[in-house]
Length: 116
Image 1: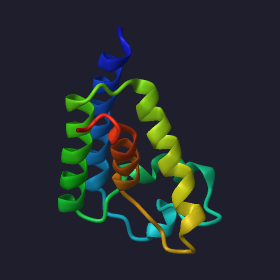
Image 2: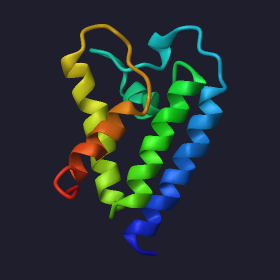
Image 3: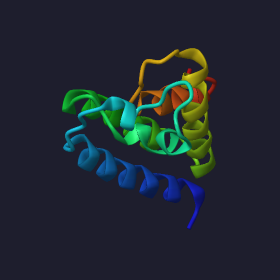
């Protein structure tokens, strides 16, 4: 299987996970959000949680657009996920952050030189 196909399959799996986790009710965002000093597990799961369904839908639309319209490899997706999991806590103080926005912005930055 080539990397582009693997990336598209991974994107569809991420879509399903986000829809499932968005339907979950979260009482304490500190239990799933990313913030300065949070557990490592929070960095892995925070993109799958969203504050509301509209936020999740807009993030997924942008995410899938980048994955399916541009030559996005699985390694670019992993790098975007890594960047999104490490940078926000360095820039934010104690505000928990959730959502796929960080990954989407990292992907936007990675394709910015390909867009004319």
